[in-house]
Image (cartoon, rainbow, N blue to C red; front, side, top):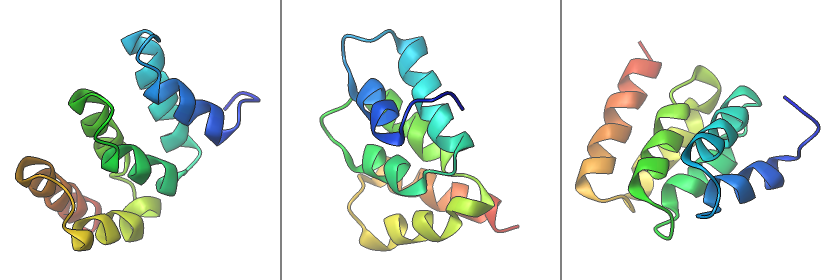
Length: 95
């Protein structure tokens, strides 16, 4: 991870003027740094495009993020497709 802070990566991931590649790179930097809360916040953020919300959700598919992902599933705030994906990712993470 570079010298950027998690907040800077979140800003990049939510910046609609940034390239898709840069936004995905920011999400993966959060994954690498195990910034599970920040990834969950991106998943909950309906102001960003669905593809980046899904990218953040997939990035949560690590053992380190399993508890945060469980909280996200339990909150029941996601649309049915994202909720279903979250449950599948959680199941994969815990097996």
